[in-house]
Amino acid sequence: MSPIVDHEPFIRQDVALTPAQQKSRRARNIAIGLALGLFALLFYVVTIVKLGPGVLNRPL
Amino acid sequence: MLAASEMTKYVSDLSYRLEGAGVAHVCDASPSDFVQLLKPRVMSLVVLSALAGMLLAPGHVHPVIGFASLVAIAVGAGAAGALNMWYDADIDAIMIRTRGRPIPSGRIDRDAALGFGLTLAAFSLLTLGLVANWLAASLLAFTIFFYIVIYSMWLKRITPQNIVIGGAAGALPPIVAYAAATGAVSVSSIVLFAIIVIWTPPHFWALALIKSGDYARAGIPMMPNVKGADHTRLEILLYSMLLAPVGVLPFALGFASVLYGVLATVLGVLFVALAVQVYRRRIGEAAEKAAKQLFAFSILYLFLLLALIVAEHGLGLAAFAAP
Image (cartoon, rainbow over all chains, first blue to last red; front, top):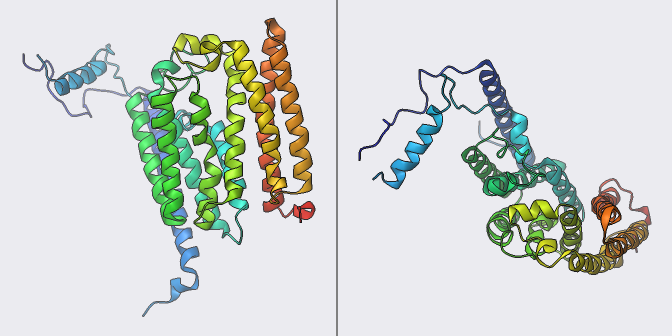
């Protein structure tokens, strides 16, 4: 028996999101962006703290 | 015949097509739904207990390093919560207490919860390892493993001792935090671990007495459903009598103040008194009220003990500290 459906890519052109779906997707995207931004900031600050004054100690 | 992988794909595709009327089945979860997956109330207790463990550490911990470590531990606990909801989605849908959670209510699908939990777990472990040390990261990994595999996947559905052993997962954050601060494990952090482990059975069994019908419908072998309500009441009383002196240990061992010792003693006596009420009142509304009171008080008990340790060691209120 052959597969019943063709294996289309997940993103389909014939699907129109409802306004609620678009709104929730936008909110999720903003949340992911903020989380990644805070993650990067956390690592930046921790790096500065761990290196201390040594962060400026490099050959010019 | 379709191969298993093709069948999975077919079912997956079908779920998108059966929505009908041109409306696609697309995730419409809000960020707050994903926050719910993290079990924020459990996470708040994890943060408090981890902070207490960290503040018991000797020497100075840089505030930024301490904060980053606590964030990593909190996110790791949240990841464990999300993975627990992923695995328990079937029984969560049956129980009244949990059927409003994001997966059984249909706001988030299981695969998304699994991906979310695994991603957060990986990020939290990596962060704790790089920011603090790999002993702490290993202990956090063990905590997540214990909660998901040992408790959720194994013990929860087969033994009434599930939360006795599984409670260890919820009790590990002080040890993880102490290790993050010092790179070692100490008696003081093990004492906090012991308090939370012994606190867990009376806390959850008080809830199980109230929700025994819920657990029975879901087929979870909680103590009241397996050994009966009266036996559960006896065990609650025994664990409460054990908890009261163990709760005073931080003072007895010299890492908490006289004020803590007095408070822990008073709260321990009240805990036992409420457990006695649960033991004596076995029928009707009085029985349910006693169980509810003990459940609510158990949360207050742990919160106050941990908060006092945090206040003494973190806010410099150790003027009454034991010599």
